[in-house]
Image (cartoon, rainbow, N blue to C red; front, side, top):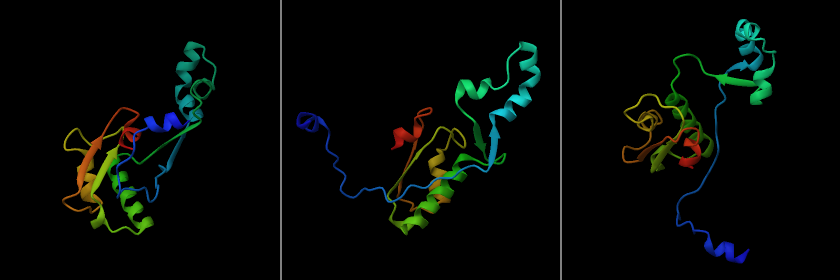
Length: 140
């Protein structure tokens, strides 16, 4: 184990830490059963049994926001909640990394809109990280 520890890179950040995790759960639940009910005519034509969507995917339900709600709106709301929970003043934020699968639009970066809507300082670094389904992990 000691040899493994010598090969791991050392973090050089002295003023960075995670103060809190916050998130937002969309209000509308859409079950696999509901989707299959809408697909019933096709299932019947193809002779497919009901229940296969959940069986094959393991997904019982999905969640969605109201039509027209942009990802950046939820991100900004989450940033404001994180600041509130931690008691950190927005003026102290030096960077925002927006890691996501979804964007509000191609350009400008969604992070720029989140930065503005969350009231972060004008000199805070703004970075969008989009890496398919790994955007959040890559941003981390």
